Structures are given as C-alpha cells and as structure tokens.
Image (cartoon, rainbow, N blue to C red; front, side, top):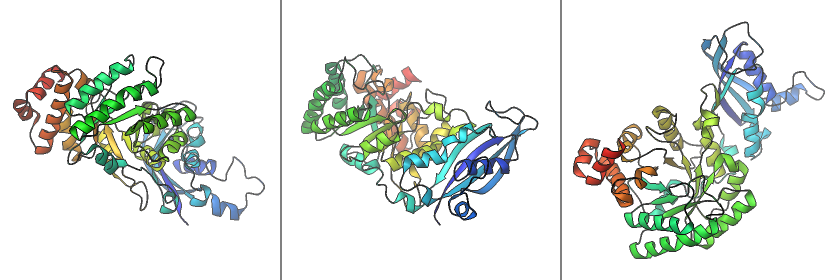
Length: 414
C-alpha cells in the first residue's frame, strides 16, 4: 500500500520509541485508551506506523515548556512515521493536519520539528503544481542563462500610485527584469491596488513596445479570498504579468485557489517564516515547507539570501535553495523559482553562486538598488555586473576594478 512518510526531530523525557508511538497514535486511529470500533483490522489498515527511531544527543534542560517528565535527560531522536494514502484523499489541509496537527502540543515532547515528507505518486498525481515556475517565468521575462534581477518598491508604504509608477519607469529604463510590491503594500487608502495597477501597467506596456522587453511586476493581492480574486482580475484585465501573495497570511487553501486559476505566475512571499522555523527544536524545515506550497501551485518562493539581514545562517539558505531543486515526490518535480532576498546587493552574488552553482533564481535587492550612490540605474547595473562577474569566475575585487557602478556599490554597501 502507498504510504506518506514524515521525518521528525523530537526531544522527549520518555524513551524515544514510546514518544514515537504516541505521535503515531495521536495522528491516526488512536486516543489515550482503545475505544469501541477500534478493531485490529481497522488499526492494521488505517493506523500510522513508526518506521524508524534513531537516537541522537541528550540535553539536561528541555527546549520547550510543558513537558511532564522531569526525572531523566531529555533524549533527542530522528524518527520516521508513515500513514496509508487512503487516510488523506487529495487533500492538502488534511495532509498538514496529519503531519503537524496536535503534535506540537503533546506533553510527551519537549521538542518537535518536521524535517521532511515523502509523498508517493498516488498522492501527488491530482495536483498540477506551478503553472509557470522557472521556465514560465523566464519565458515571460525573456531572461536565460543568468538569474532574473529584481527589486522591491521602496519606501515600503507611503508612495502614491503616480510615485510608484515613476519608480517603475526608472527601473524599467535601467533594465530590471522583475519588480514587486512590498508585503506591507497591498490595498491601502493612499494607494489602492486598482489605482496602482492603472498607473503602473501602461508604463510597462509602453516599455515592452519600445524595447521588446517585458518587465514582470508582482502586485500584492494578499487579502480575504474574495477580495484577492477581484485584485487578481484587475491585474489580468490590465495585461499584468504576475501577482504576489503572502503565503502564511493568506493560507494554503486561499493560495491554492489563486494558483489554480493559472493565468499569472504567483510570487510566494514567506513573511512570518521565523515563527515557524527559528527555534532549532521546534517548527518545520524548509525542505518540508516548500513541498506543500509547490503542491499548491506557487511559482516563485522566497528562500532568504546569503549574508542576509535576518537571523538565518548561510548554510540554511543554501539548503533552502537546494530544496527548491529537489522533487516534491515520487515522479513529481514541480519546478519552482527560488527568490533570494533580504538585505541583498551585488556583493553577495559571488558567494551565492559559489555555494549553489545555479542561475535558476530571482535575485531581489531593495535598498541595494534604490540606495545606490549612482541612483536606480546604477543600482541595477551594479547587480547585473556582479552576477556577470560571478558566473564568469571573476572575484568581487576584479569585478569592482572593471565596473564603476559595482565599485561604487562596494564602497557604499560593504
């Protein structure tokens, strides 16, 4: 029988095998006592199964409060648990309820982290995944052989539609590939989304007619679902090329509903990621997280950036980039475009390429472009020069010596 298998890092004051059995029971047929109707046949067919338990280190202090066993060291272990496919149907919310659900509240555990999930083809087959992904985004932008270079409209809030349009005009003229709203800019009174679309899209259409280059603009349509659908319609009607959604705010079902329309690439912003991931003994690894959003159909997803402004270390960012290149499940690739962002400027291009050896990414810089000493055009040129140098095998110093715009970026941002 096909089964879905999840791998967890757990911490417990119990024997790890007993804690694993508690998880399996909580997330399938069991309760704290056997109940009428819970036959051996039912358990055999539908119950979760502990596949493996590998003990790791132990600690003297529990990572999380609320654990009810205090008379022994707290043992950490990596465990694998599987469920029969017929428990789920093609249902993403039920998948999440099963993989995570009540587990974080179990008193047997002082730590729980979902590391990965293995999905059989029988589960992934009904899903279409990203309609655009890497290839479709590249086709719209006409960019091949290098990363897409993008930016975020700054200041994040406060600009009027006409001021936003002026920024867009400058960016398009400078040769940018991709522009997006900030996650904080959606449909405020000072810049309603419909007015912003009406101000921005004529500039991008005019630029495309003049230059032959189509610049993607991801309008932030994050809202209640009916409103988000109306925002999506506005972008389509105006001939737009992309929309953005705050994944953790809108939720899996809402995001999937928008992705299922399939008319525009969906740029997935993961703001709020830290609350799901920052504690090393709690939450979810990006390896598992991104699979859920790829099943929902997100075309582009944020992964943070090298030497970023947040807490996440470089090795975690590299793992996230590589996770986007791994299959979602058996016989299911669903290519997604990783979005590198957060405090980026051209200087991180060299280490990003050295560590990942990929150009299949969208490289976003806000202040790194907008605050360049030579202005917006200089900021775009500097990042283009940096990535060209990195791909060609030149060092940061060599590239700075060859290009004034990048040299000025080094002088300001490094």
